[in-house]
Image 1 (cartoon, protein in one colour):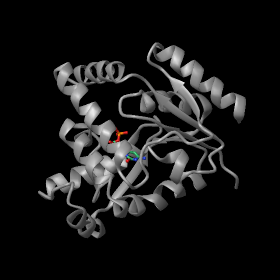
Image 2 (cartoon, helix red, strand yellow; image 1 turned 180 degrees about the vertical axis):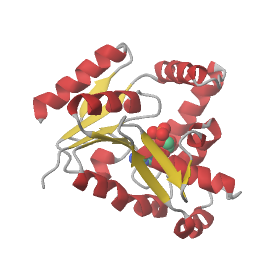
Image 3 (spheres, helix red, strand yellow; image 1 turned 90 degrees about the vertical axis):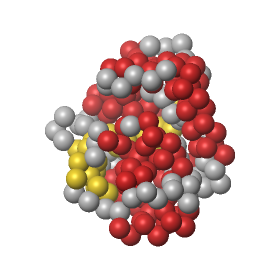
Length: 223
Ligand code: DC
């Protein structure tokens, strides 16, 4: 069966997951949040007291890591680590940095590659991440590079953390976003970059409704 794949890449806090989830629900596709998979690995290594930047230690741990994705009827993606639901825990700020660190190791990326491709073979998907259009699904039907200024992204992340009941100071959130941007774009393995055939969507001056409209327009014009 031929399935449709929409790849959405971009830096942290650009609104990829909220927009991709809304677009997937509108189109009836499965939404796959690949960042959550890297976060689950990051969470595991933190729990085990492994240094996320230690490539050898992280690689040695991979065979013990059992990650599963579940999609409920509500379209929400839940993450399981060795059977335990870790959906909430992987959103903690320390896990964000650990996820960024473990995602730099080529062994981690290849460990997760087939899992992501399998989902796209089995379903019509909107998949978001950093290397979906460049590495995971290079033949995706539509590729979008979704971005916004770092200040706008930090403001949105602050709001999200506030709504979750875990507020953080703006300056700290901005610094973390800049640090993750640097990590994600400077690593040797599958760095974040816009695929040549990706459409650029900058949401700095757009609200959610305008961004979703623009995203759906890009998709519908091409599928
Ligand atoms: O999208 P996110 O913020 O939840 O992702 C967490 C980290 O995982 C991010 O800093 C980089 C990494 N990541 C990646 O390297 N490749 C992906 N396809 C998705 C996420």
